Amino acid sequence: MSGWLVIAGLGPGDAALMTPEVDQALAAATDIVGYIPYVARIADRKGLVKHASDNRVELERSQHALELAAAGRRVVVVSSGDPGVFAMAAAVFEAVESGLADWRNLDIRVLPGITAMLAAAARAGAPLGHDFCTINLSDNLKPWAVIEKRLRLAAEADFAMAFYNPRSKARPEGFARALTVLQEACGDQRPVIFARAVSTPEETLRIVALPDCTADMADMRTVVLVGSSRTRLIERVGARPIVYTPRAIP
Amino acid sequence: MSGWLVIAGLGPGDAALMTPEVDQALAAATDIVGYIPYVARIADRKGLVKHASDNRVELERSQHALELAAAGRRVVVVSSGDPGVFAMAAAVFEAVESGLADWRNLDIRVLPGITAMLAAAARAGAPLGHDFCTINLSDNLKPWAVIEKRLRLAAEADFAMAFYNPRSKARPEGFARALTVLQEACGDQRPVIFARAVSTPEETLRIVALPDCTADMADMRTVVLVGSSRTRLIERVGARPIVYTPRAIP
Image (cartoon, rainbow over all chains, first blue to last red; front, side, top):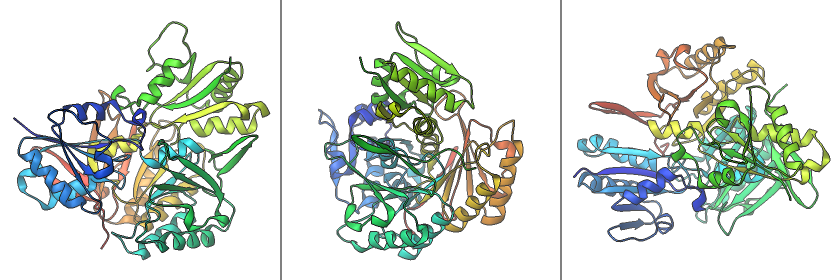
């Protein structure tokens, strides 16, 4: 009886965006561990134990999952999107590094998933079709000064940008500050995409020129994509424009 | 009879990493268009026409796919990984923008896939677990000066980094120059991951400290991940270390 721990990405919402590899891990699991809404996405079946926990307890959740695997259980820690992008994989490895020596010998695997920025980019066209950066705007775990510095350098590098966790009820002002920095640093009309709950029934997608963006356009279910200076709109009759970043810089 | 055009991501190689959504599009297609090795991944079946073309003809390939869809065919343009990350989606939209007005009215959809950097990161642990940037190191379509500027700014921002197309036979010197810039700009022992052909039978993964990296460690099938200054190794007995970037910056 040897346990294992898989950290799996469920994708952005639609089951058709979850890989067969993740499906197989879920089918072989004895235990599912994760944030309440993600655990709720897994169908009940006989012999499957679900351990749902609230937000902001990622380290305790990881320790619990490691204890279960060490006791011989087959454990899947579920993340939305990809587990390696602002999700559970880093938290589990923090718990491994600071935990029992034996945990390092466990069979631990990370299974990738479709992360929110790529699902959102696909809906909009190809806004991340050239060099880009990916920033977690939450200042729960890092100082605002680091975020602002990264935004200014990303603008100077002329990266397209993808932002996770732009805005929460607990920190309504952070995203407004980020927009002010970008409006000043970019100084142009580049398109910004507000993609909310992509691939779910609540999906919305809005394209707004950077000077017209306001903080209330995003919430915690929104991923925000900001074009580079070269990102373009293809206008269409009776349909949303296509947003894409060309492959070449002359 | 109305045609459509889907630009689909096949993932990094293993069929278990391709989404059901892409599978369904392939099953409904009359025509598959793409680079020779990617088209070869699609099983033959009666009524399916395959159009395989060589590298570096992305625009012509896109125009051909649009012509087929405009003629009523159901066309899937196949990309490795995710079509929006240094792959076919941007090329198709360049062709739409510069092409016939009617092409803008076509039913065009992008279906995301598991892109190479996320498959590689999953194998290594969670090296992209904090803010990161993604850069195409090929200087086919952009000047070297842009690449160097972005590398220096990315180092200053302390992003983890993912590099696509690090090295080709035609441009063996570019990656060596990139490594020199990074070794100078970062000035530390941070881990670098050379992940080749992840999820295929030829998969290899190598972890090397930045000062010890040499250009011959990568080829065009390699994605290179460079840690931030905070990326850590968890050493294990009898197994490769785990590479991860913690979630917090104190």
